[in-house]
Length: 168
Image (cartoon, rainbow, N blue to C red; front, side, top):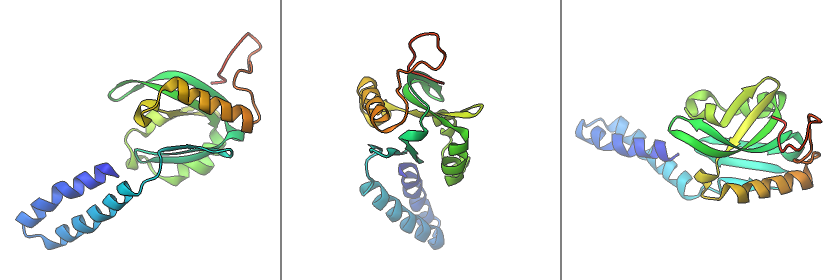
């Protein structure tokens, strides 16, 4: 939303200079719409008893705790460096039916950093730094809700070979 607002604000003076009133009208209406969206935007991350609701940087999704297969803290390489992340493993079928169909890749060029396909599983990254919260604190909150409202224990060993907080 902020990117679109910046584009509208950058193009509007050019439209005035070029006396292109149609473009100016589009920039004005679009800029006002984006400004309202930015001002009244809700929280980027909401942890509910039903699941996790995420709305940040053009990426918006809801994942019920019962479909989460794994929770893991990890570093992820992004376009601008290495980011600390919390990764949720979810079934590919849930991703295809509820998240992927919601929007196309063009809406956010960073989409590949948020969603990594791994066979029948999709790894969904939540970036605590973008939310201005400590990774350990957010991981503890996510694991607590997953343990309380999901059907799996995040510390459960999926391989039979020892302790693991992951199934990814």
